[in-house]
Amino acid sequence: MTLKTNITEMFGVKHPIANAAMGPFRTTEMAIAVAEAGGLGMISHANQSMDGREIDAIVAMKKNLDYVVEHTDGIFGFNIRTSRNTINCDNLISETAKHIMGNPKLKEQCLYALTSAGSASRMPQNKDFQKLRENSQVKHFHVAPALWLADKCVAAGCDGLVVTGFEGGGHQSYEKVGGIVLLQQVQQKHPDIPKIACGGYATGDGMAAALSIGAGGIAMGSRFIASKDAEFHENYKNVIPPAKAQDTIVRTGGLGTIRLWKNKFSLAKGLVKTKEEKMAEEQALRDHRTVISQEELREELRRDAIAGFAAYEGDVENGYVLLGQSIGIINKIESISDIIENVIKGAEKALKKAITYVG
Ligand SMILES: Cc1cc2nc3c(=O)[nH]c(=O)nc-3n(C[C@H](O)[C@H](O)[C@H](O)COP(=O)(O)O)c2cc1C
Image (cartoon, rainbow, N blue to C red; front, side, top):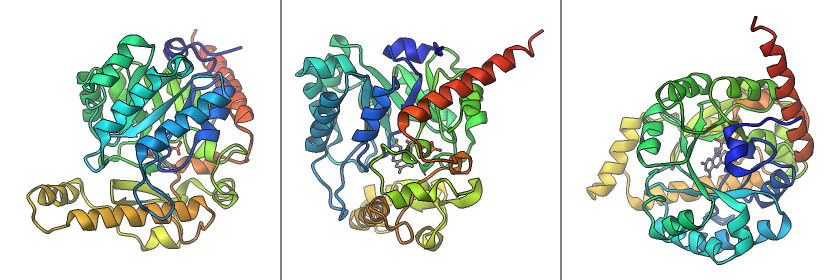
């Protein structure tokens, strides 16, 4: 049995499950495993090296796209973070689109263009991406962690939304709205746009809930980190099965609010700044005032990346362990094909049970 939704239809995939974008870390093996299992694989945005230096994101993107397409015949996509701090963002979009156009196998399989952490219109306004869109089946989704952002995505002409609730790991919205309410808000206002629910999903029951309130699929981050196929260090994976849902904390990083596993590093890090405080810092930067300088912001991003890579490479006490509240419902490290099969089976069972309530 399979679940047929607007997401399986749109992408021609067997299962409406994607791995979440998890830059700046390498998720190419994860993307391959998800695509091979019939889901939607995701290549994350790579723009930093292990020592926090900025690397050429265009070179990294092309290499990752080539690697994934050489290792699977499944469907996958890529993430580009369109925040003001993303260096060379428009070039990255152009070069990525041109690279896909230049390889027929990529054009067939790389169908999921996901932007996040910035403007939803940057990709659709890009001429090279427009060309790709006209000449392939590629679909553009943007991450919407708040209703007002979903409005912007719809206005920007996105093909779909990744609706991400505050339970999720990594960067989160200042709005702090949980996924169940956010998805209903977006569903009320934009019932027709395809939605992938994200943040807090790890089980078939969770997937059934998301599909019942308007999503056509789910994306999972923490659940796929705790897999045999993920590139993350074993120590990072081994944080997850014993952890409780309350073992994460929200702090402020270079790009805004982030959800982290509670450890020495995150407990010592600053509390969440308000959106106004963070906006004031950014405005000051644009006005060339000195609340926080461009150098300080870059330094903060560099420190975040160093600490993130430290954890990715195994130092989970002194590093930045991005994880969501879903760690409290993940009990085993499994292969990605087993995870997908179990989540689908669980969702089918829950949905079949739910239909018996209708009388
Ligand atoms: C290690 C890690 C890195 C992340 N990096 C990104 C990123 O580069 N771009 C992005 O849109 N979201 C990023 N996120 C957020 C995820 O895409 C997703 O929203 C989150 O993992 C969902 O919550 P879950 O972990 O409970 O599944 C990251 C999350 C994690 C855990």
